[in-house]
Amino acid sequence: MFHLNKAVIGGSIILLITINIYFAFNYFFHFAMARMLSVAEYGILASLYSIIYITAVFSESIQTIISKYSTEEDDAGKLKNVLKKSAKKAIQLSIIFFAIYLLVAIVLSKLMKIDYLLMAITGLILFSSFLLPATRGLMQGRKRFKVLGFNMVLEALIKFFMALILVFIGWKVYGAIIATLLGVFISLAFSFYSLRDILSSKEAKSKTKGIYKYSFPVFISTLTVVFLYSLDVILARIFFSPEIAGYYAIASTLSKIIFFGTLPVSKAMFPISADSNNKNSLNVLLNSILILGCMLLVSLTVIYFFPDILIRIFSGKYIPEASSILIYPAIAISIVSLSNLIILYKLSLGNTKNYQLLLIFVAVEIALLSYFNDNLVEFSVAFMTSSAIFFWGAIFLLDKN
Image (cartoon, rainbow, N blue to C red):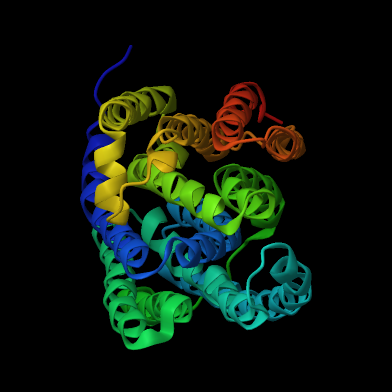
């Protein structure tokens, strides 16, 4: 029987407040950059942020894995051991993936028409993508939602104010990217301080054998979701002129407010649903869907009736090319948000069967956007269609092993 779950609602409210402050300052950042940079320059920044979003697949998957483990483990000494092992492995993987990224960036810089040095600097985000989610995963798993939210707000504040300064003095896109790096690395330092009680405890050997088996389904699932909401801007950069790609980037970035603004609901649901003592996980899901559904409905209603105003507020410019298509990527992102909630719920229960098949939906999105790109409307509808197909996959895949 459905009933309101106080843990879900309480955790969601805390995260909705703190993490939406984080996302608010992230979008203040984009608002400011869209006004301080030209349309073409902002198109470059949005494309680089799509790459950053893709590297976030490591962050989200690692945070999900650590969150699930720390939800089920109460021994501070064992949690300290997990954090130390995670940090060591994170540094090793960061170096390897950064080296690979530098090679791939040679090709991407030519396809996307972006300076290689700027692409290379952006790749430094990989180091925080592996390290930061280990500490934040512990916060999430131990249900320290206030501390987690504060850490994310700190990151956004530093990024926002440093970007204003660096872009103002003439560093342009370079300034925005450097500000982004400063934000994540300073918040990383503070995240270790926030876990000082665990770090000061006597270390005990932890058993993490099952955690690595669980990591592959989480990684692939997260990778699929991140690709679904990121590839559209990168492909638009390839298929359209810099100015047209800039118009699309503004509409797409604005629509992503929906995903990031509602993400706290999924983050609050996951550790509660994953808790082995929770015997009514289905009710947790239903509560989460109710909260998320109401938020999506309000968001889409506002976007449908006021697209011109929203684009003008966001960019400081009247851009009919962006406002005319805004509802399509907004619907697409809303569908991805629902899909992400369902996938995280299934992962919280350990349902990982058929996870490899999720990558098919990335191929479907690439195929649709590569074929239907004669204009922005056609491209946007293709994005919406691929998201709807992915929603079907989220419902019917990831069964129990």
